[in-house]
Image 1 (cartoon, rainbow, N blue to C red):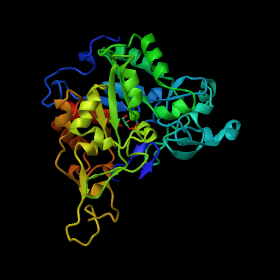
Image 2 (image 1 turned 90 degrees about the horizontal axis):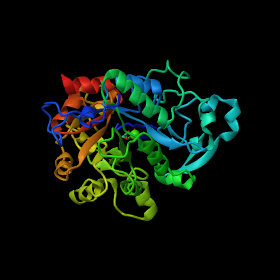
Image 3 (image 1 turned 90 degrees about the vertical axis):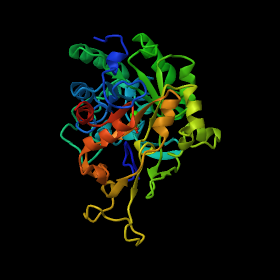
Length: 387
Ligand code: G3P
Ligand code: CA
C-alpha cells in the first residue's frame, strides 16, 4: 500500500507567534481559538515537484502559514530537503552517468532499499541534480528544472518571501529517519539545532515547529531547545472496517522497534500516550484517519466491498467517512495541538462523502478542531478555511 513519498490512505520576519497562525475569529474549535494553520506539505506537492524552492514559494504565494521541508543529510553533513534518503524517485539521479556507480543497497528502518542515497553525495554533487515529480498522475512539466535546496535556503526563502508579503511564514522541518542517520554517522538533531540557533530560532515563539516520527530524538531535542516539537503518528493503512492497520515498519516509531518497545503509533494516541507525549512535545501530527476514519461498504453482504461510484475499481472513493474519534478532544485536553496530514485535492484521494470536493474534507476536519493541516494544495486548504 505504501508508495515512496505517498500515503495513499486506504486506498520581514516579524517576531510574533500570532502573526504566524493568528487568533482571528474563526469558528473552529481549535486548541487556543486560533485559526487552523495551512502547512505547505513538501511545498506545493500537488503543483510542483516536492521540496523545491519554487514549490515552497508557490505555497507562500498561495497563503500557506508554514512551509514543510523534510530533512536528510548529505555525505558532508549538510541538511537538505528530501522526503527520503533514497533519491531515486524524486530526482534525475538515475539518468546521470557520472553517478551510475553510486547505486547501492541500504537498510532504512529495517527495510532494504536499492537506489541512490543522499548520504553518499556531497552537497556540491546534490546541487547538480534536478527534482522530478514522483507521482505519475501529477504535472510532470517541471521535471529537471529545479535544484534540491538546503535547509538554510528554505529558511532564507521563508524570511524573504514573508517580508515581501508582510507576514511571518513559518518553517516546519521534519527529521527524516533519525535512527538511520545516526547509523550513517550523520545525526540530524545537532545540525538542525545549530542552524536554527544561527537564525535565532530557539524559543517557543520562533516561527519553527520540528516534527519527527521517532520519539527519542524529540526527547533529546526537548532538552536542547524550546522550539515547538511535534510527535508524528503513522500507520500502514486503514482496514476495510475503518480500524488502523499497523504493519512494520509503519506500526511504531522506528526507535521503539530498535529498543524492543511494544508500544505502537496507536499507543501514542491513547489518553496515557498523549500524557507522555505532552512531557516532550507541544503537539501531535497524526495521519488523518486517526481523527476521522473511513470504511468500505458491503450493503448486499456478499463479502466484497461495494463499488460506490461504479467505476469498476475499489479505492478511496468507495469509502464512507465514520464518526470522529476522541483523539482531537483528548489531545486538546492535554494541551497538545493537532496538525493532521495529508490533504490532497485529487478526487481519487477523497472519500465518497466529499463528492470530489476537497474543500468539504477540509471543512470536516476544521470543524472537528484540528489546529493545522498538512496540504499538498495550500490554496484549497486556505480557501476552505477562510470562506
Ligand atoms: O510530516 C507530516 C507529513 O508530511 C508526514 O508524512 O511522509 O509526507 O513526511 P510524510
Ligand atoms: Ca513530512
